[in-house]
Structures are given as structure tokens and as C-alpha cells.
View 1 (cartoon, helix red, strand yellow):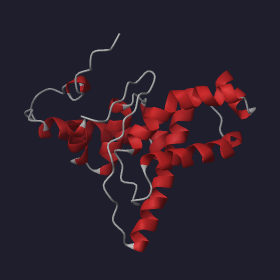
View 2: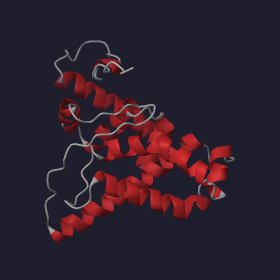
View 3: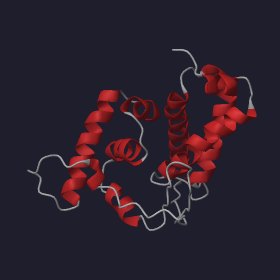
View 4: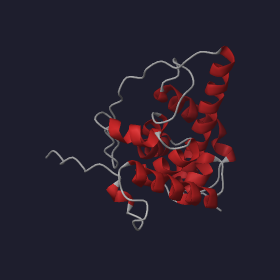
Length: 196
């Protein structure tokens, strides 16, 4: 697989290419990390995301693929950093503190996490792998391959975890288990009207 123009430019140190990659993925990365335990009261999702960007910048020469593939690679870096934070926190036997609500506006995703507590509550009922698969595919629009890369599992494992997670969410949200599979749009909150 060869790099697309944006990734090739980023590998060459083009600051505009890095800005484009950051613009495309930064909001989604922080939103996803805010649904995952960081393991350390001092490691806010923004901190883990920033560290992931630094690692990505240092290791971009090892990456090959498109700018869409870059998202899975970046999210995988962030997942590993978060897991390392959790392990260190567990060794120190500390408890994570409460996180303040995060307000984000991502260009194409209009992610507003405040007021979406019901989403976090519903996702928190799922086992971690199912929560991650549903969050990446249905919440952030990843395809199965990119989600698999981010989670360090196979695309089949993502499909299975997502299927199970959506079934559990339907049950949690009050649908009858025997109903035909409801589209993921029923799980999503209604979109806020755009200003302007």
C-alpha cells in the first residue's frame, strides 16, 4: 500500500499536511478518549491525545497508508498510551478523579460532549471491547478496518463486538431483544440545528 499525497507530505515535514491531519482527526480522538478510562487523574483525554500526536510525529516514517488509515494508526497509539497510564495507575493504586465536561467542535463532526451524558451512560454499560467498537464505528464513523487497527484486533473481532454492543444497547434502551436489528441511527441523539 502506498501513501496518499497528504501522508507523503506529512512524512516530508509539511506543516500544512500535519494541520490537515490534525484537523481531520484531533476532535474525534479526544472525544473517543473521553469515553475511555485514562487510569490517572492527571491524564486528561487531551493529554493522552497530545502525547499520541507527538508519538505519531516521531514515528510517521514507519507508517504507510492513506490519511484514513492514519486515523486507525493514531487511535491505536492513543489506546496503547492510555493502557500504559492505566497500568501505572494500578501499580500506584490510585483512583482516577472526576473529569470536567469537554467542549469540542470538530470541523465535520460537530462533536459536543456536554449534554451527551446519556451516551456515556449507555456506552458505560458495555464491556470495553464492545464499547470501543460501537464508539469508533457508530460514534466516530470509522470503517471496520480502521477501527480494528485502532484497537489492535481483527476486523472480524470489531464486527462481532459491534454487533454484540449494539444488541446490548438496544436492550438497555428498552427495545425488545426479539426485534429486528435497529439501525445505529436510533441510538444516536438527534442533531442540534446548525446556527447560521
